[in-house]
Length: 255
Image 1 (cartoon, helix red, strand yellow):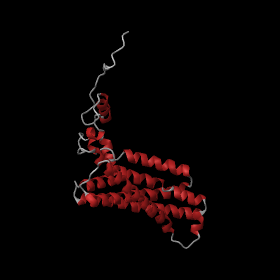
Image 2: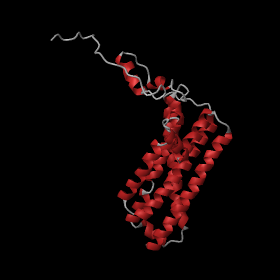
Image 3: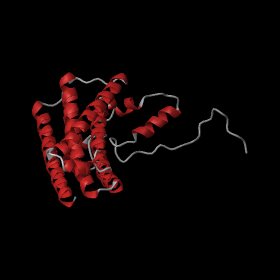
Image 4: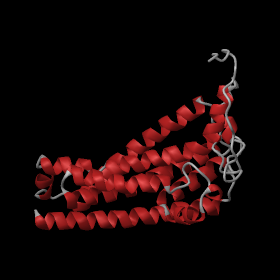
């Protein structure tokens, strides 16, 4: 059997995708590279509706919000360590306000979230991202991240006070964070999602944070659109703190 020449292309068949908008952009990127065309993935994704020519600009608000959500989801491990080391028990016999124990953790987490957001946005600028929203858009992005991360952190601390083990906390938090991440607008616009998913993402706090940040950074929506979503995040934070304080009260009675 004769060996094919080194420059001979292997035969392959390109089949159509289910629809034009949902084509596999990464597969297309691989085909370009196969033929020696080094087209960046952002250039391919930029042709899809809703991305405005730069997937990097589209993705940055989602990455900042996801980072805040992940940070908040792991926050409860600090309460677990406090209980294991006896710190929580000693705090209960001091005159410190009980709510300050929870809010102190949340303030620390908020500072971490802001630092993470600054690093991520800085890296995005280095990679070429540009935003029309300016400093005001950045402020909204940081505020949305803090609200989301603090709410997730409050729930994480409340769950830690009830579970009292690292394994249970990690399993529960990841079981919540991962579905929230993929059922959101962090990676894709609702117009490209199945109908059921496009409906679900509207009730996801991560989507509220991403949409508010994205609208503020792109300066594509009026202020009402952004304020409404920040209001939803603030309400989510209040409910989360109330639940965390109730969990703390239950722990205190059982201690």
